[in-house]
Length: 296
Image 1 (tube, helix red, strand yellow):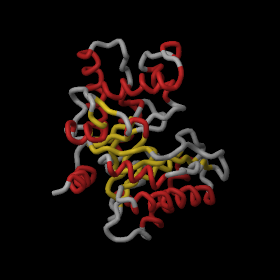
Image 2 (tube, rainbow, N blue to C red):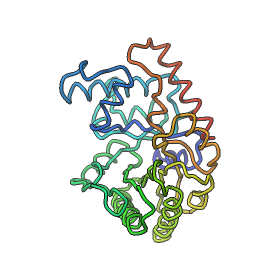
Image 3 (cartoon, rainbow, N blue to C red):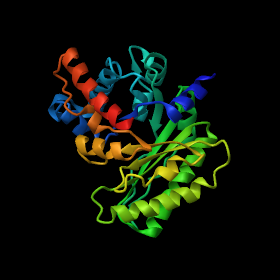
Image 4 (cartoon, rainbow, N blue to C red):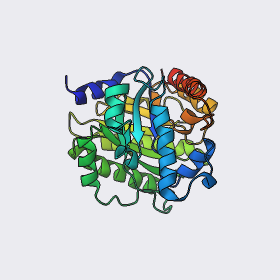
């Protein structure tokens, strides 16, 4: 069986969760600050991104960061071009940790209109996808946001997600569509009903044999996305925490039995740059175990 088929099977039925290691330039300073690295500790973007890469490398090389509990990981584009111990990151993830590599491809969000924020243009996307495929990346992820239960906005948001997904599929990769619903929305539940219907409509237009994944906010009704998870075109539905506390996100995930986690902040909660390797591995291992148990 080819690596691609093994990865597909792991994504379809593997027990565990997808680690989100894809903080972008805008969210990096906050992520580093939580890790104990303050802006005064680095000078300029290059040093900031190097500090972030060191943190990601420490996570990836940790004892418990293996396919036994972490079945996939989403990378920032700079990380895909970088190395850990002189090995390209995507290659190391798969060959040494057994973790399926994904790439974050979105370039940020447009201003809000019709209650949503669409994806900004992604110049050079086709070239990026070819590079990703050559580096052993299995799939991609793109995030847009829904703030209100606005039918027009949600329809536009989902249509754009599938438009990008078709480009990803044509490049031989598996897209993760991420139309996030804002957890603070006063119409969150209603937005989720509209979102489910729009996604289902577009899934029915995909050709047989095509795989997509969905990354969705933990829903108000735990069963809300069960039918999407059972759709023949859907490889897996994964959940983003969206600002819920780790405990709240894990509790909601245990109720939403058709979803597994794809958390970022919850994964790194409590980690600090000054920890010894033993302390770091123990703290990360505890986080991994908590998210893993909620996912299975």
